[in-house]
Length: 433
Image 1 (cartoon, helix red, strand yellow):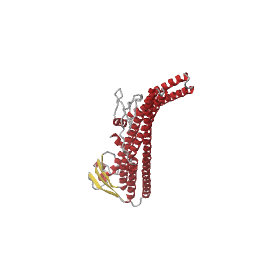
Image 2: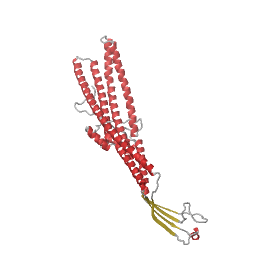
Image 3: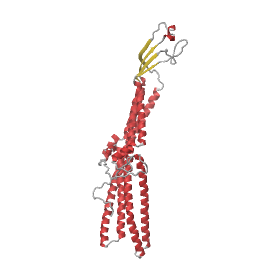
Image 4: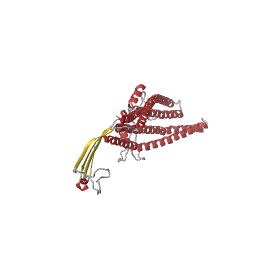
């Protein structure tokens, strides 16, 4: 009798997962789903690249903001002079030179600094998107591997029933009780079963290698999976999911930050009609051997100047072009934001409908499996009473196994669709709490 039995009522075969063996251990070690995802995140190259890009963006924002922080430089040097003493920069040579500079007001630079800060948030959200993608990929691989192994076990168990049918049919044909076509039909069914076993074995090997790659393990190291219930969120109305997605979806939030970045750039360029203000300071320690006394009536060693540098734009040929460019980029960003919101709304509605259809399909598969199990019980009773032959009973068992495989596939498809929906609505983190 098949070891798998269907429990009447609500059934959740959320195949789940298991886990990588530790790198040092020789035997596979089962780990919780949460730990398995953590291992995959630690070994993800995509996540490492996203983190590096975020670091670059954050450092770029710091560099743009540094224009409004004070800068102090000190220097010294020696040079031979002939005639009037001067340095390559045109200033008088000094034994010690100390300079200070700081931008106080520059709308263009201020807008660039604010835009860089907004784009840092864009890249941070991209890092979060990559983390979610790795999480979904890992969980999906776990579920699919568990499903493949369950289906493979069912297919292998069908061999016994297929062999009994083939032997029984061969005997009846030899006795003249059945036509030879019945034997050919039984051989064809057995060949199809072997074909299915080969396909499932290949699928299981590929999924095993995929999981090993995700977890940073050797490709030939077997990863055991455990049946673990996947705590999916409760069903929520479609309208609530759409509203949730519009407020938390990462694509929408990225588009919003990009729009704000371009708005800062446009504002900065528009305000360039105002003066720019910078503060400066300079100190120099002069020496007598530079012959300053020959060119100036009065010589003093210590010299300094401190003040503000104000630049008033009278005619700026680039301003109108830069403002127009900034406005067009802002308009484009606003259109992209609207399109992203619309696409997310449609995708949630589409995915919600897909989940509903898969839940209905899973219920149909559950009832078909229940019916097949009840049919096996009826034929078993008839067989024991002598009112059914062995071939009918074994065919019923084969049908039961087929219905089990169909149910497992249906359950996996449903859970995968729910994972995708959680990813869109920004609720994926709740799954692993």
